[in-house]
Length: 413
Image (cartoon, rainbow, N blue to C red; front, side):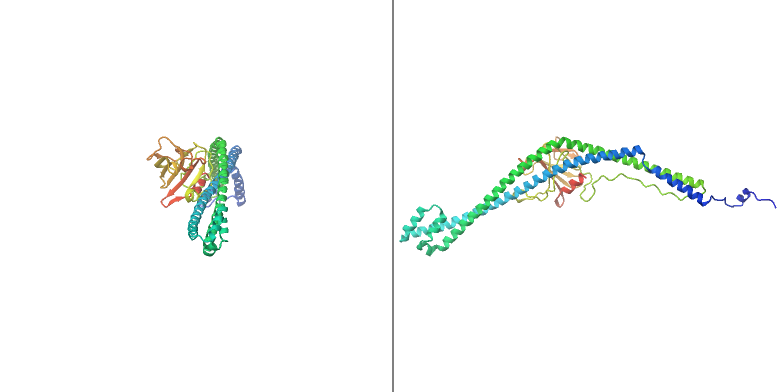
């Protein structure tokens, strides 16, 4: 019987002999050991990325320390200002109450004087003694006290005397309280002026360094973003190459490989601040050194409460459009806000900038502006005259003013 040759078995449909399982497993292990090498960052590139991140962290730290100091000064100023407004209102109320008590006292004094006229007309035995009291005493309360010893007055006018005594004591108490409030008012005003001087001086002193660090941080953030994207692309390419290499090796070993999943797209970290407070495309309204706190609701003159955020900054610092939109109104040295700009954003919100020093050329009612475009400069016009230079900033929706502080913080990340 003739021997069967291998090619005869192939023609008959028989499969070729597979490689041993142990050999396939060993090949797979070798390939898997190579993949981490493909995916690991190139030493030089990794060092450059890490160096960029360290520089960014250092610049952010320096800027953060300056900002923290400025915000602390802004808080001291804002709280002193609110306290002064509260004391102003308290002094006004105390003055009004003291005046009402004086009016009541004058009314009772008039009645008492009328009673004296009656005594004079009667000219009884006690009249000479009472006249002596009037000439000997200068203090009206002492007149009442000594008059109480006269039978004619004591017998008929005791209630009147007690009423006068009560009004005199009330007026004295109110005037003492008023004086105490005035002293507190003077002390708080001195604190406010000192806080203003310190804050404005510090803002001026760090303005150049602040701007330099802002520019440096922006540059380093962009560099870190670019390097992160390059690293993501490099890793993606390495992963694809490793998968293709593994598939080729498995095929050459006679193994059928499963379809590789599509590589995931690696995106750089989201740089937006996120959260409900963020407004898309929002630009911080002061382009330079500044400080602010959440002073929404703080006391203001006339019993009002603060409906915005005061952003402290040196005079002349650029004020920019926070979003793209159209200027709907401008004023110059008018009303509480002084020099102001109203911006109707393309996002449907209205933005109010007040206490400005100047309005930029070309900015007027009807002007279309882009986010970040200069509108004006920081000042202290309107009822802020004499106070710290700052931007009063408001955001308004269809339902009224909303607290801008969370939006401002989100814009700064």
